[in-house]
Image (cartoon, rainbow, N blue to C red; front, side):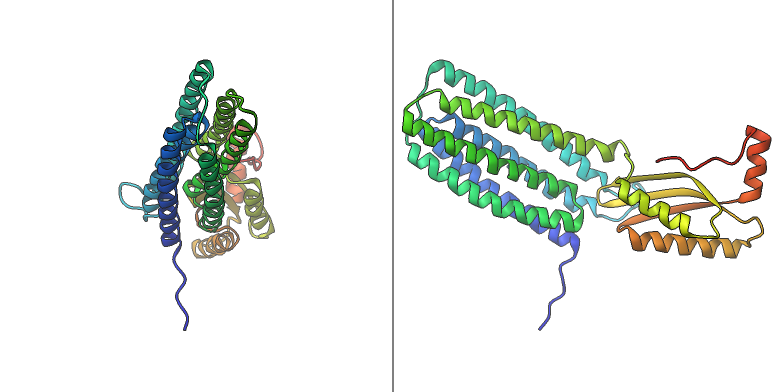
Length: 312
């Protein structure tokens, strides 16, 4: 008996749901143990997980919206909601890191000593195992579906793995030495790592919002297709951008002046099909221009040859 594979949208929503459940449980567990033990590093991890939980809800919302088809009010689709949600997650992480630093400094000054360290170490160990498994799953789905929101969520969980390991080591060292300053020091280190993650996530989120071009390997693939077509005598104004998992490409191609409208149309369709086969989830708009007429126009109005291809 065979089953139909899940569609990409269903996979993304299922992965986001899993992230919400795991983050909810870990946040509640860390918060409870952090309050009981008085450990600022465990509380910092609880805050980190809480920010991940909010990020998971944002990712869940965005993946439900981003794959909606284009409509009259959104002719280019809804893909940029993933970039917006990813940016919102980064801002939440910045705020969480700032709060952790403030709390850590206050605990350091007060020379507060955490208690029930064995319980805290057990919670951190459980957090590492759970987040490793969930993050791997989210990364697989994010790569398969090209979801920036899920990738951001997975990055949060991967950072949580590192920070949980750091807190676990700090608690073990505090237990072994009885040095009170280790706990807030580890919490500050966690906050700095969180800030780095937030900055990287902010940069990746802004690129689609600023209509940055597609990755160079994808742009090179488009160029190879255009260059390999003998009937394409030149091209210019090649522009690319990405919106969620959807890519948008447009370019002007120069064809022989004597081609009929039908021949030019058929050629354009063939080129667009080749690009679609090479690059997934793509919308293409090729504008055809007569080669010799364009040469005359450039010479008469601009004093030079037709425009050369430019980098996107």
